[in-house]
Length: 456
Ligand code: FES
Ligand code: FE
Image 1 (cartoon, helix red, strand yellow):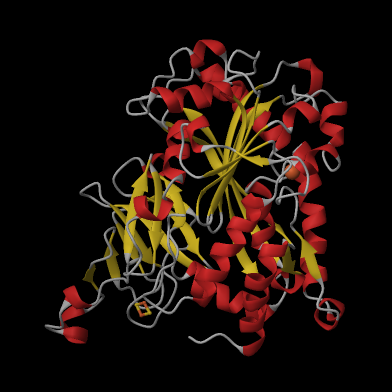
Image 2: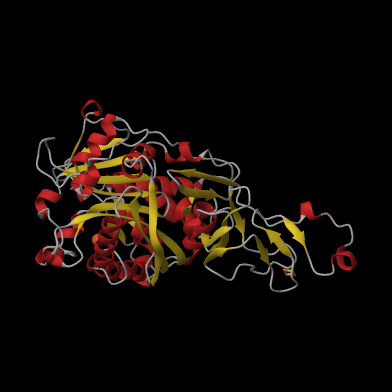
């Protein structure tokens, strides 16, 4: 699994360039880099699969991806969650032909081998003649090496040597708590995920959701023009950029003083927010959520979260909180499938769920006011990254915002912030992205079984 010379040299360039805030453009389009990522990043990291509410009943399943490979995420008859490689043990045929459903068994279309929802082989046509006393227990579906949930978010990894999910999330867990743990009964996915293919590199999505707040004033200017977002641009740039742990970054739009007027709790309705006490989140976490106008973050590699106040139709409605999660599903060096889900808190009224869903659809969806803006520039990041010119000119990209002496961002004293990680004040800052690429290069260069540090 050694890296090719070209990939190796690009990873060396990242390592050498990051202290200067520079990243080679070619990592966003080079096909060798992409092939290495499938193995070194997606083949090893904890990858987001589904939310438990999507497979609430025994027998429920959804079909999801790790890298480019299909996995059946099923709840078996014992209520346990399984992540099964969607390939028949007989000839490797894809078994599951539906995106979601409920079934106690999966039957291969080729010769009819049949597996239970936990992946065990239970039978095949004309079993006695064909296979006699062959051992069924040795011929089940292959499973992800490890599967774990956090706040109902199911993650899986193909690497048996991966550290436990909680350790992998590191400081990010504290911040996920204060978004997903606000309602003591948890969250649920509202409706089926939206899926759409964009000719972009998966890292552009992860990079943007690590905390690219700066683009809002230019690319999303129209959102303010129609009154869909209540916080003025310059005010919205106030807040914190946080490297929660190596790889995982996030950003809060937040006023400087705790008694600053709202919107609080990402704009969720006040009567709902009044019930936010969580089951196991601390008063400090609750206070950070209360003060927060926007939360945006990325769990390395490709799972992003966004909570913010939005309205579905400009100034006609007051903004309401929207919570969306998405994966940047890799389909090639220059292609992703975006899987986009809207999330509601369990104790929302049906009207509140309807409102948040509509406001989400109007902004962060295929036809959403924000989403349409974002995907177009990402197309050209991938196109230029794969160009002859980028290679011949050693074209590198600038990630210097907020470095010492560059701009106004300053590191926050750990005593002045209740959560984990490296914290910076004002969101004019790109350390959040540098953190992602630093961990990315470490993962790309790591030998099998070897893991980068999860603490700074
Ligand atoms: Fe599945 Fe033969 S390939 S039963
Ligand atoms: Fe955007």
